[in-house]
Image 1 (cartoon, rainbow, N blue to C red):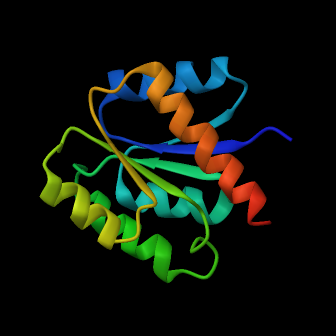
Image 2: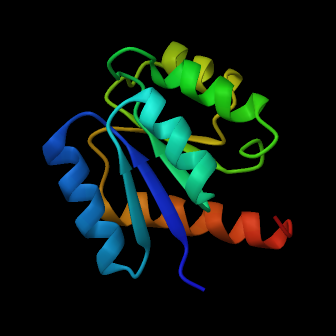
Length: 128
């Protein structure tokens, strides 16, 4: 089964790059450019993983993550925060808001793919 990954980022070049990288690995990629769209996509498409930026217009990544965790439909979807906010306080806040993992931009392709594969494998092992 092809894993479905939702990328949430408002930067077009970042979105295009992440989409290409993930599609090249055989993943089905969904895109959202703001919080409301992200929540709608997550509910409608039931992704296997969400890659979430923190700095978004309107609703930020912390708020999105909390909404995902508080919804029965999305509470078990793994969330990987991928953000330019690389300070330890940002990482801690993201994890406290419900993220499962955190990577700071820029990140290497191999590190991103390794994290994605690990999170999808862990989700599969848990039977979710």
